[in-house]
Image 1: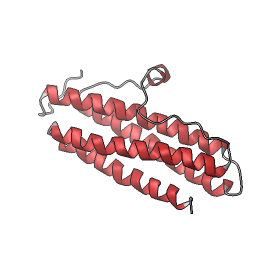
Image 2: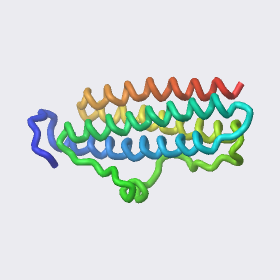
Image 3: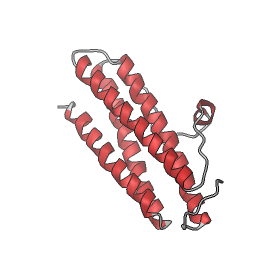
Image 4: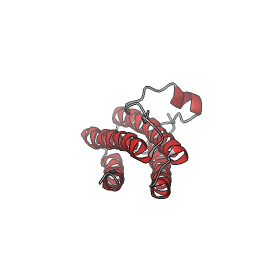
Length: 158
């Protein structure tokens, strides 16, 4: 723990830091999954999906940065090395598109983004119950952004 003058009780900050650490892992995993989709998608809608996946991966990187920085602001270090992430238990569904064709990859990305969005909404409530309005607000903003990406992804399904 880092020294801080933050007035939220340390016990609350510790529980919030645990939520933020989980969210950090998920955001980094989301980024890597969507980036893999960006690299491997094929088919008639390649250009649109390739660009869309890249934008989502970039935002996922921003979410991870926000979660890590919030944890530090609360006085708690983060674990973000590849070995830490590889050893974390994923709360996201398996990412295994049936093929590299656009519709299959799109379905896999939608499932991943939808689960990430659900987990973020859970974090809104969990951090609010810890009386941490700042972190709850961070997750609320993330939720709006992820919901927009989910809408844009689903718009490609017809």
